[in-house]
Image (cartoon, rainbow, N blue to C red; front, top):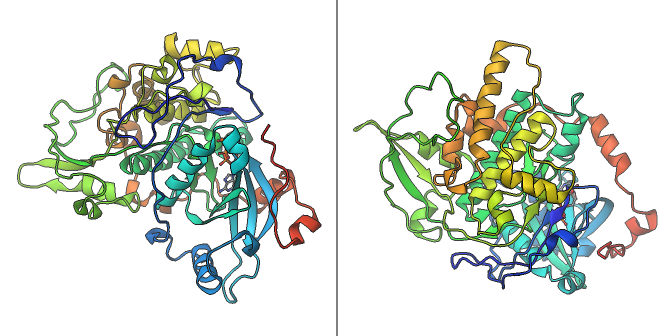
Amino acid sequence: MATIARDESDYDSSCSSLTVPDSSRSWMSNLSFGSRRSSISGDSSSSTYSSHSHKPHKANQAAWEAMRRLQSEKGPAGLDHFRLLRRLGSGDIGNVYLCQIRNPVVGLPQSLYAMKVVDREALAIRKKLQRAEMEKEILGMLDHPFLPTLYAEFDASHYSCLVIEFCSGGDLLAARQRQPTKRFSISSAKFYAAETLLALEYLHMMGIVYRDLKPENVLVREDGHIMLTDFDLSLKCDVVPKLIRRKPDPPPPSEPNDNIQKCSTPSCAIPIQPVLSCLLSSSLKKIKPNNHTSTTTITAQADAEDNYDTEMVAEPITARSKSFVGTHEYLAPEVISGQGHGSAVDWWTFGVFLYELLYGKTPFKGENNEKTLINILKQPLSFPRIGVSSSKEYEEMVRVQDLISRLLVKNPKKRIGSSKGSVEIKRHEFFKGVNWALIRSVRPPEVPSDLQKVRTRAVVPKLSKKERDAPYQIPQHFDYF
Ligand SMILES: Nc1ncnc2c1ncn2[C@@H]1O[C@H](COP(=O)(O)OP(=O)(O)OP(=O)(O)O)[C@@H](O)[C@H]1O
């Protein structure tokens, strides 16, 4: 599905992007689409770039160590330190290449990296340079098992190069299409959705609204775990983490699907106690999410004295944007209507994503993009009938449909996750039993086999020997226009 990119506005003062709104909203007539579902965007940013030199959870990685040693021995990384092996893919703002360090440090295994190369001059002409800048800034902030590590970034001529983690397993769209029924089993969908939810949770805690969730943007690592990629449509905002004290969950209702409009937040939740000032405060350092376990740890702490649970909520609820960004089939109603949107768009797209993983299609797809958008605004949610093989599977299906129904609520204020973020969603019955802290140690539904890797290699275009051996490898073939 094609990403849609429109120059409109992110107008909230708490956001790092401020541009002039496009009042014409004539996007329907001038979009172009490739084989991937493309995204729509219109962001800008003037924020400063954060350091990416400290990545605690990557500290033991050979790829990280090799890069660190390269830089300590040869100085700042540059294009001549890398050999580009093949093109992995292209998107709206750049090409991504598989690459290696040219003369690797002796004793360290040769690691593979992905290098995203964007042509700054071409992007400036297309007024998309700020999208690339935003992506670079966000990548520099990330340190999470399900998000990419930025190993190095440098400019070469008018190209900007980002060296990030390479995922050998392709994306979740391709993985879904490889399934005999073109859809995942409930347990596989739960696994991928749970890891994706943790990635979104971390992003929201960092004040980043992702805005372009779709299976194409969820890559599969060599070990079968996921990596959410592509941040050029993301919105960066301030976030105020809070600790909430709430009574433990009541026993589950007998009919989980009986009232989809009912808020999943237990009515016994007590008022929010703001205890943390902002992301930059020193107090936050104690809880800054270096990985997905930190939230869980805090959430699990029970207040033994009065029987309340304490949980941390860091949802950027004040984020506001009027940009028309995303991918048609995944757009939230509030994005289409242009009324202004915030972090709840990610929970809408999470619902569409879960639906697509399970049913092999998105819920509101029409004959064309215009009809899709009308369906998103007007059509009630419905689920196709699919066969289940046991009563346990049937119950799982009821639970997941209930969760999707709560995510795909057209009014963003009534959508699950809109006020407390991921904690509300993680608490839903569908995810009961998921070990959030240890999910990265769970065996994934598929671990990309060697055969798959060979297949991937066969379909990505190879660079010529001359191109591979040339000392400077500034790519010549950007298909921007
Ligand atoms: N880390 C990675 N490992 C393997 N392949 C990757 C990696 N990053 C990107 N790719 C491949 O490159 C393609 C383009 O990358 P990406 O989506 O980041 O580009 P983009 O220009 O931002 O795209 P979009 O038009 O969606 O904004 C992806 O579809 C994917 O196939």
